[in-house]
Image (cartoon, rainbow, N blue to C red; front, side):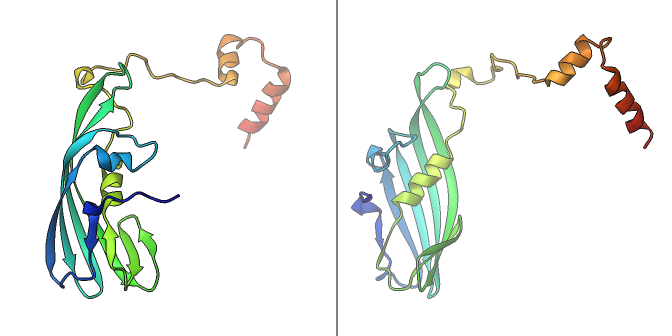
Amino acid sequence: MTQKVLREFQIDIFNLGLKQHEFEFQIDRRLFALYEHSLVEKGSGKCLLVLDKSATMMTLHFNIDVTVELICDRSLDPFDYPINLEETLIIKFGDDNYSLSEDVIVIKSDTATIDVSNYIYEYISLAIPLKKLHPRYEGEEDEQPDLIYTSQEEETDTDNSEEVDPRWEALKKLKGKK
């Protein structure tokens, strides 16, 4: 599957000097439309990126300030959810493309451009809460109490404590002699 690309998220790293560079990206629904089954369809804001390039690596500092539209899990009403986060990504130069960890990747030394849209999208997606509640429900307790599960054995012990198989009683006595 071919990934669509927004040109404004492409950075020509080949021609960048070995110093610090600053970029600003506008985030809107076009970014979220690049990804099928996106958690977010609408949103707007900006990302300030400080890229510090050296001979062997680059450090990318993302400062993302965006408001996304989410759908409340309880009422299905849309609401605006503000996201303000800072993330750091380290890109090392090497012989092949691979990931060392979630915040350190290696790219080929002769790579001419990098696309930062995927990183911005991932950071925003990870900042979305699992339980999406409209702000009017803040502070309210869950309407459904936590379910307490009991095993069938516990239920039979409490309900029918008089009707215990004598073989189990003998086993319990043996177990207690250890």
